[in-house]
Length: 98
Image 1: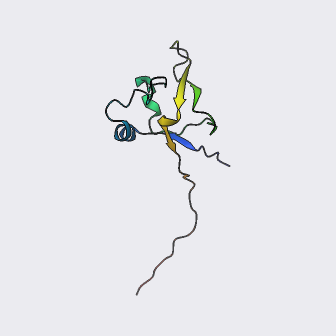
Image 2: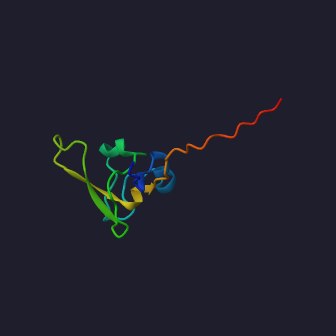
Image 3: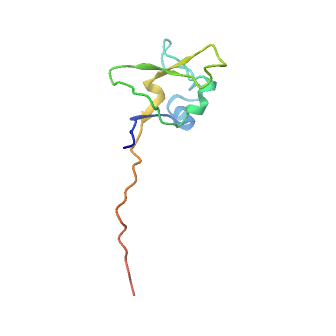
């Protein structure tokens, strides 16, 4: 069975629509920002558990060996709900007209 994760990162278009052109800065002063090196995450599924009672989690970076920063702080404002994409195998109704 495929594990369904409940969140995905917003796309760049969604960020701009919600926060304007300065979308990389956090909503509040104490929140983390969306760094340029995180752009590969835009629109992808967050494959980590994010408990509902937490406002942020830490995930490992893609560049762990090349960077001093080993983790990124991910906040709820960076995410949107991930709709299930499980395929539907019901056969289509065939309409036959003569």
